[in-house]
Image (cartoon, rainbow over all chains, first blue to last red; front, side, top):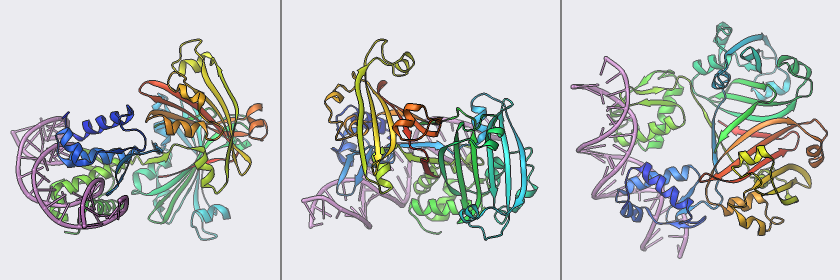
Length: 230
Length: 230
DNA sequence: TAGTGGTCTAGACCACTCA
DNA sequence: GAGTGGTCTAGACCACTAT
């Protein structure tokens, strides 16, 4: 009998795994046994074990019992980058500037990726993000006018399109791709670096109930790092 | 009164948020009210709301009630990359080859980052990972001998150091940094690309209870993309 | 078929925080 | 001080699955 509270139990069990009391792949005692050992209700043990399973540390099967995950799939979490917050997190002052704001028909490839009818126009925006006056990232964005017609009247010089959308559009799903690319001339010009510099790019597409909302590419200043804890 | 099960409730509430019934920033009914409405116990509602809060969709405060998060911090999750799985996920055949396996004293900067005493040796490994015979990634790795002395006798030609460590060392914490860099000559040679090509790099450090275990840099083949769902 | 985790309930008390 | 979420409990039933 040690303590209670599912947090405490969770921590304790995690320790027992880490110290090797239950090696990788081993079966750990059932909930009822643990409940007796810790002197708490089975529900409490259940919460602790479920949390550890969520964290990828345990695998649980009915009748099969609970095992220490033998191939720990550590899940990294990170918040979707909001440029202003990234900048301000480094203690710099944020500023942004809309460079391009037009309606145009996207190229075939992009239109297809966006679920737009051929020939259909969308809102195309280019924005520069600054940290302490220096270019921090260059943003190219497509916005679906059918989904968000009000973007045309949004005060995008005051609030970045990113934040405006986040504050306006209800929750949505999406995906992100990160990759590296050599800077083309216009990208290099935008973030004031040299042609060919390795640039970290994030390419995000956002959906709301099967409907495309926005697709945004962010070209970060050379040297940018995306940090994540495991 | 609709249904029960915290999954159902969670889904229902998520829908009500998405449809705008509760706009961004709005206060949603308290747990007791919802419990009455859904015809289930407060505990069930609590679970559903906690899950949504974990997902970054709600913010909950003790007396302040539960609000729809006005600045949705969508959490992206991804599994820490295990190269073999990445390769095999694309349907390619995986192979790896240890290029360098020596003991040496790391440079000052690295030794400091690794918590090693000055002059202390560590195991340095360079490994090439192949997909269908083509270079997929180039790995540079430091391993702390004090933490994992048995690495010296591990069959690293059969199993990559990455997998061996994952299967051998108990759970641990760590951090990852992703960035882009222009390929130096020896990196370019290793992955058979040209000097200066933009390379996607992941730099991971792993700890076990304050003790450094391993630090690994992975230089991915040009064109590599890290994909994540939100 | 039996054992394990998954979940629900009803009631209770506590901890935080807003007014 | 009062209202909200955070958590625990004890008991119950169900669903899956290993044997």
